[in-house]
Image 1 (cartoon, rainbow, N blue to C red):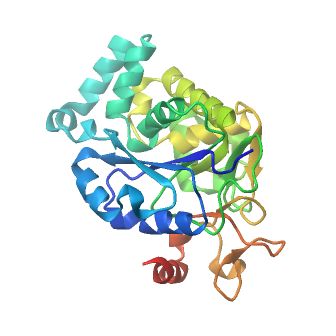
Image 2: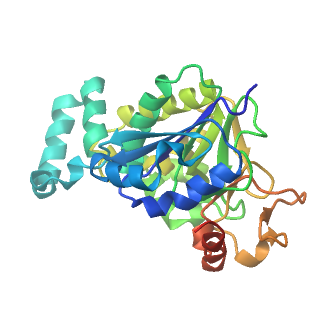
Length: 302
């Protein structure tokens, strides 16, 4: 298997180019040679191309024009949002194609990005490995695909913190599924939807599972908030994701560190994050929740 026959798809909509510089530079330093697709708004494209021309890195950088979240900013929608959402729910409850088109335009970017992720992926059927990722708070210490095989790699947050102990998670799950589901899965650790990777088929199946759930839920629910992670956790703990591998942050390819105490993390003399076996961590997410660490990383790459 060729670890450079891979694609990394990241959302950069609404970000200035400077916000993804650490993401791109650290990935380049990790010797990634595949494709990176950045979702950007058309209004920002020229600025991105000035900052990061296609020849700037050792990987192939591709910009994809995105419209996620833009329709929510239209004045008539903001003014009449509750009425419009109820009307769309009534008109298109059973029309999945139309409902999908509306969610792409009117759902929160956290939700609508999944439609664009799948569109990107289905244009690259010969790809072996895929990563779907946030960009603002992710950086790389090693090649992201160097350790993985077939399967869907999902990042667990601090395993000492459960869904029921996190106010965001409880709110998302309760709003979408109710108290019964929250009580059923609340004792599990939080699985973050911000970084997901695996072989092509596993990630493609994951996206179809997520999108089918979006379309099964009421339209008025799906445009209410950024419920993607609540849904992601519900499906994981209902065993709806095939070949799922739960990645603990201190012993796997994905290190999601936002809920750790900084003093409980281990670093080497170069201030690289180490796993419990002493090896370097690979993909680091949410490092910016720790300001001292963020400053060190900024000093290294900016």
